[in-house]
Length: 340
Image (tube, rainbow, N blue to C red):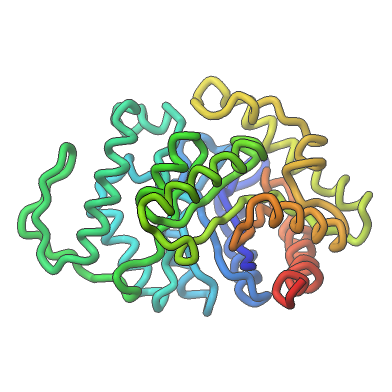
């Protein structure tokens, strides 16, 4: 099993965007050194306490010059908010700068404020997403592109540079709605899931639909990956871990509840308390406890990667996050990589 790190970079009133970016950059560099496989960067807009990362491909480009082996992906780029040719150019550029380490993680998004801010009707998000993905993939694989869709048109376009990875970087699609799982399965791409957003049962049911649809459309399940986002904190003792992770989780949950009126997401996510996350949705505790929880997730979801969310609400210091990351890399990851 592989392991990644996830960032959306919330920024509190007593924090600065520069400081938050510096911490996240340092942590991804540490993840590269410790042997984590992926760094996932979110795209979110217009809500400082939730995120100050509207342009994750810019951050990924910076990281491409300060890391050596870790893959750099978006989780996710909100594809309907952008012209797909521009996104295709930027991802291809990242792939060139990183020596073939770009990952194309995309989603539709569910926050009406994002769509209002960009002047795009949210009712168009599904159709724009499917068409935008089709156009981006064609731009990477065709020497000269003619395209005439409902939203996007191209005539004699030669996209440069092309990605190093051929035919294009790996495609992962976020699935946080029941209708998305079969869509991703029909397209034959890898999938990103977040039990915190759609519940443990929602992910289990969704992945069953995803895998069924993969088979129905003739896609090889061994060629795609399931990635599960999990809040993670590893401590020397169970008590210290539970207490240490509480402030950052509570900050995230409080911010989420404050944004409730601007989201179309699952109502359940707004009602979660720390105990719910500790008992069911996260992997928090000693290395042995974290291994046990991840074994449960492996049995339930059969994922190929765990996306570790080490500082969910942005309240932990860089030193605290680093200690947790090191313990995870040294005492948890080997269990799953050495036949555990």
